[in-house]
Length: 257
Length: 287
Image (cartoon, one colour):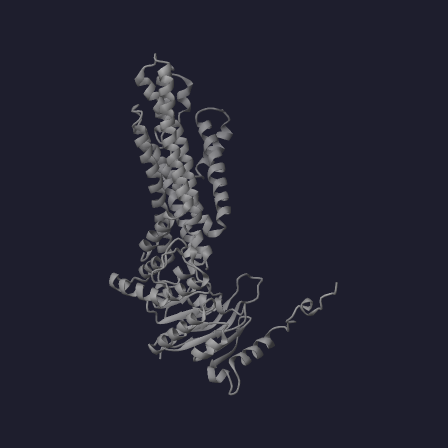
């Protein structure tokens, strides 16, 4: 099966004096596969997905999305991208944002009339008349996911999609991923919520300091009798200096007056 | 250029909902109306006292006063509107993170830049055009025969404002929008203003130092030239006519001539240059 995304020895740093934010990342994603990219804060997960989306320029390595470089509109035509902390033109309404993005996706009038209300309903934003600047973080997150699926993508990138969602919203996103997988869509999921990733992803890569520490199918990465969280903590703690988890003043006794 | 139309359309919708532009427009419209009506009322009152004035001359004088103030005010409002549009049209998309969602769609950076530039220019033309329309209606109060000068002056004001707006638009893609506005102001309104003013003075023979004249001749062709309509000349001539100043007077020497083909071509060059800078800045931008 032809890979949807092929990433080879990907490297990125933001300033010359900085350490590599992404350092030699390699993986492939096939149709119908859900791939979880895990890692602590600053591991380089968002940089990886932004490079796949053509939003950041890599400093080294190769990326191909549907056989094209990621910066090309042809590659992005089949891509849905839900960013971390999504935002939109703040004086527009949710329906206008979707209409705007439908135009950028080149959807015709009939498709727009069908898809926009359905996508708004999926996101729980039907009938919402307020402008984006009045939206809560959760509402923006739901709109972020809605705009990502609007063009019926063959590759869906979800960067921390459930961070600001309530339990019902999280359940909807899980159901969405399951349903997209079944219809052959490749899903790349960036998340801190290990239980979510464990439930929906077939393959997983654990990153820290820009490098992939372990990669494979869920069964290969998580041995019998263990959980993804156990594996994650073990791997990440080895790669990072030990931290005193509690500030000393927290455990100090209050002086008696 | 797929998507440029959508970018332009929704940028215009966004701009139309920005309060700052509405405030500038309302202030400009109210100011124009107050200026016209105020002058009319004031001079009607004084006209009742001094009845020995020729009514036609008085009307012309009133219109002249109105236009002199109006052109100054319109220039300032157009500039404010140009800064406001330039500071917000692209910057907010980039800073809020909206650009991440937009650039992940199959729209090229060229189409995005073109859409933004078209929307910004259209917004400026519509707002200044509406103020001009109002000014034309207010001029019906006077009927002093100077209405013809308004069109040229409005076109020149719009053209000059577009240059500043594109500069701010390009700079705000590289840097903070307030810093961009300050840099643009220093470049266009201070440095360019001084160079153009000194060049104008040197050209009119105000000083005879050939070296200074030569230096400013060169500097003049490194900065954008503010386009000048025939209106300032028309106003001075009308004023001279009203005050019966002799034709050979020194006053005529300092009337700025209307911009010629060279200045318009130079303006066009800067429009293309600054629009190109907007595209380059957007293309380089990582989000």
